[in-house]
Length: 200
View 1 (cartoon, rainbow, N blue to C red):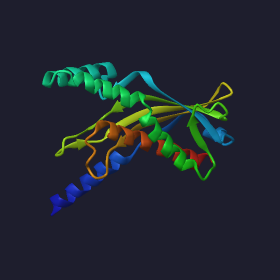
View 2: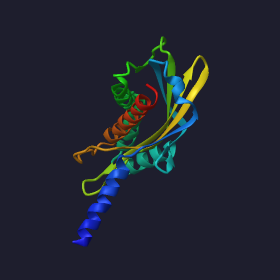
View 3: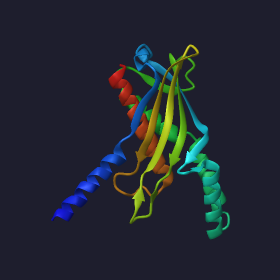
View 4: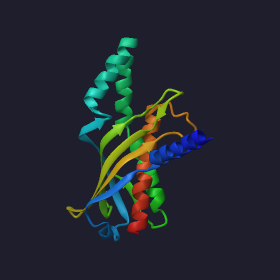
């Protein structure tokens, strides 16, 4: 009985840790954003992007070699799909949707290519972990990024959003891009919710 309770407690700790994301204001004062009602969203991947414990280049080359060894050409196709998912805007759309959902009541929104926006919000992704799901074992994806708010050429505030977990609730998140998109979605919700609470 005691062992059973211990396992349940351990599971609750794991679930709790897997759902949390760290947010830290690194510079500036977020209160200075209160007059801005529209954001021009810009998204980038850091030039030194890490994927797990490897550089992105190392990670992709490892996957390419591994999959091509199993079946010729599949590794090249896998890398092409990775780049398409990363650069195609799918992940950023997920971020943006949840960011805007959190700020709807405040009348605040963020969209790409909005030259008339009050402020520019630059999201720079510096860490990705696609996680895995092999049925009997699974680990969520994680993403970390920095949010930089700029208006009239001046940096207003910088916020670090670290290790947002991403996974499907039902356990059917076998696709890495799905898990990663959930991490981006979580980050958008975290940042939008924080601004709604602290600024607007």
